[in-house]
Length: 80
Image (cartoon, helix red, strand yellow):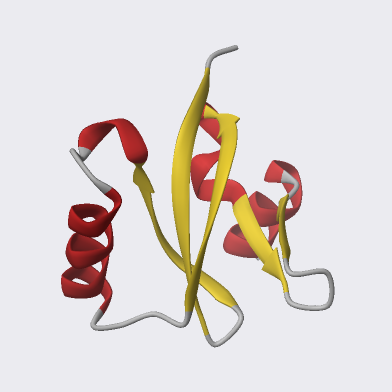
């Protein structure tokens, strides 16, 4: 499984978007793009994740870290 370097943007203790770091020439351009996409963010976290898990990451404010959501739980919530 391939891992990719991402920057996850957090607002109000929620992941609001993620960006593949390899798609931008600099961190400044990445942050500028994220600001335009999200209309602002509180913070960001850089993390390497398996490429299929990018959209399953959630922010834990008590530990100031990201964790992977369980796919089956997310699917059940969407279907329920």
